[in-house]
Amino acid sequence: MEKTLQKFLTENGAEWGTVAGERVALHYGDIQVEHGHLTESVALIDLTARGCLAVLGDDRVKFINGQVTNEVAGLRPGQGCYAALVNAKAKMQADLNIYRLENELILDFESSLLETVTARLESHLVADRVELVDASPHFGLLSLQGPKTTEALESVGHKLPDELFAHTQVTQNELGEWYLMRNDRLGQVGCDLYIPTAYLPGAAKRLAKAVAGQGGGLAGWEAIEIARIESGIPRFGSDMDQNTLPPEAILESRAISYTKGCYIGQEIIARIRTYGKVNRTLVGYRLDAELAESATLGTKLIDESGKAAATITSVAHSPAHGPIALGLAKRTHAELGQVLTAESPATGQATVASLPFS
Image 1: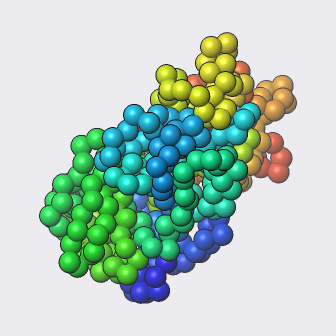
Image 2 (image 1 turned 90 degrees about the vertical axis):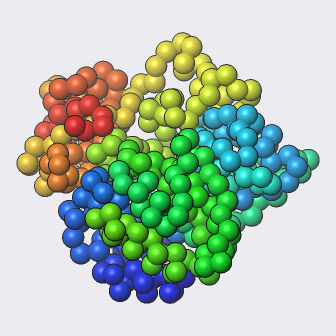
């Protein structure tokens, strides 16, 4: 991240911490207010810590289409999709936002996964005319998220693309050449802006003024996590990891094409759909007061007979819904209203709830 952007965010109240090895703004002084920006107006989010890989070369589309779970070959320039990168056993290695530009593909993913994604793709390059370039030193990602994103964007002279993952290239004297992507990251309307690194501070100042004009403001990691969990959106590194099958994280409708050609891991994912369901699934939980105080990531839940039933993967104290969580539960223990008990050292109970929370 540019030091001048960091300075701007610090001057606006950023309290810094480390998440997945990256320095991020945890909050700006009032998490509840920031949550309100995300859910009731619009928030400006610093996502410059995320990984960004550019895929170049004549074979880029064919190559990436053979690596991920969703359809890339059918995308036109200006379109995009969400997909999973899985190994031969269909276990996840990353989840990706993929954008097809005129002469390259852009892959956006969690900050800690740059080496994993690059190494995985490089291991399958043979005679393909493909080049992989880490774009994160050259571009930084800022994001607007919330129901008034459209209005905030229009106030600075830009229109939100109608189609999810659609994107446009913009050239401005004060911001250079940048990209505007439609990406509803938190269950509300949203967009991402890939800004050349040198222009990030100026862009942040301009966007902060735009969201303030809609009654919004800056939002940090802690408020973002609350909004994400409320919307039931899994995050790689928390609710899904290298042991997760995409259907376990309920990614079928968003990240998997069952009609595209072959890709790494395709046979197993197709077999799951054809012959049976996965043994566990992502669920929401409402936590009682006791478990709200003792739950941590990885807390085990057991049924009334003492058998292992689920694992808590994300926890939040929601201003709207109280203490809530996401978890991976055995399918036999995922029925709405089912009550599970925390395994020691945690105490208390969790009740299976529908997603998104309402």
